[in-house]
Length: 247
Image 1 (cartoon, rainbow, N blue to C red):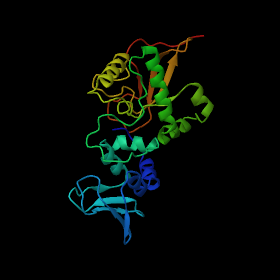
Image 2 (cartoon, rainbow, N blue to C red; image 1 turned 60 degrees about the horizontal axis):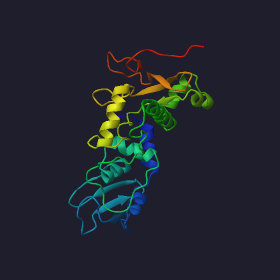
Image 3 (cartoon, rainbow, N blue to C red; image 1 turned 30 degrees about the horizontal axis):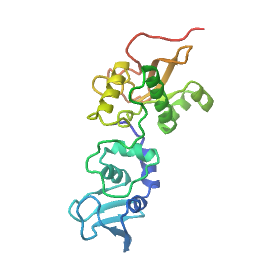
Image 4 (cartoon, helix red, strand yellow; image 1 turned 90 degrees about the horizontal axis):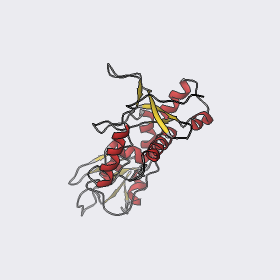
């Protein structure tokens, strides 16, 4: 699971309204004391058993399913995804669709960053773009850059710095689909994914190396978390030859 700073989770729990997400899904709510009640979307509910506390911004079903939690758990349960995936959706301006909840997620709602059938050069550029977009949304990675004295937004953009938060996989079509399987095989061959299916540079600031034609010839990753398991290297590269640009 990608590391998400506690303050980022708390911000999402505080700023994203469960009431608005429920109403956007078509759930009609009415006031009952300090709470809002409505039909629970997570089981076949005939008598309103969904209770939302709009002040604490938490929810609980007092009916058959008995589920509850914060806004992260609401999105995870609504879309049939993990909490980590739910956080990624919330960070990317998640908008719920009306209608029934998803029982089993088959296609992640994150925009797919890699095009099926693209050549290796294009795929590597798309990976670099995905990691660069992730860095812009990751407060912890930006704090790491500031700690290292890299505070210039122009520098980050010029060198296309990025961050791997382990969400490239969930952003792809599901691996049991042809597109998802083929893209993952290509990313594994390029070294972006390991044979285990994990991102090779997960948890790392990503520095792409380009040749003079603008092609990505290597990715360097530097772990930003000092609390690493024993034997974990701070510095990573993609498998294969160490290539760079000399002028």
